Length: 56
Image (cartoon, rainbow, N blue to C red; front, side, top):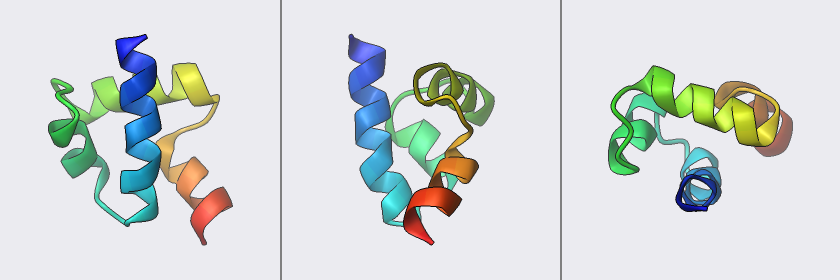
């Protein structure tokens, strides 16, 4: 549940054009890779792909 909440928070940060590294750091992930892995698990695509599809 905690990870899902972080992913929801990341959607707003992605919309604000924060970098993937910045988002990972803000949300307490150990690395950008860890954030990307969690994001893909919950959203079915990478953060960059999500951003392109939803905020371009």
